[in-house]
Amino acid sequence: MTPSLLDVVRFLAWCSIVNLGILCLWFLAFLLGRSRLYRMHCRWFPMSEERFNSIHYLGMAVYKLMILVFNLVPLTVLWLGFR
Image (cartoon, rainbow, N blue to C red; front, side, top):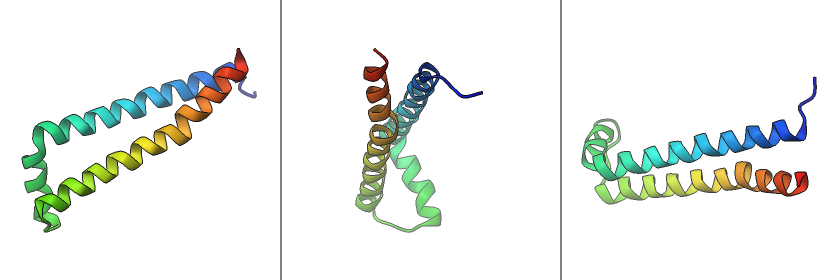
């Protein structure tokens, strides 16, 4: 059984929603609990707070870019093609 174009559009839409939700949770955890996260990570990986902030900021940027490239762009192309 092959998925229809509508099934693929729905799948990509749900993937986008879930991934954006994960990104929002990551941002909120970082925003509200940065000091606790920093202390937890410094037990395993000694680093400065500036480096810790940079790593998380870069990680969020890369994750957001991957959502855009692998979820939102294909979703938009298929959605426009489906119309």
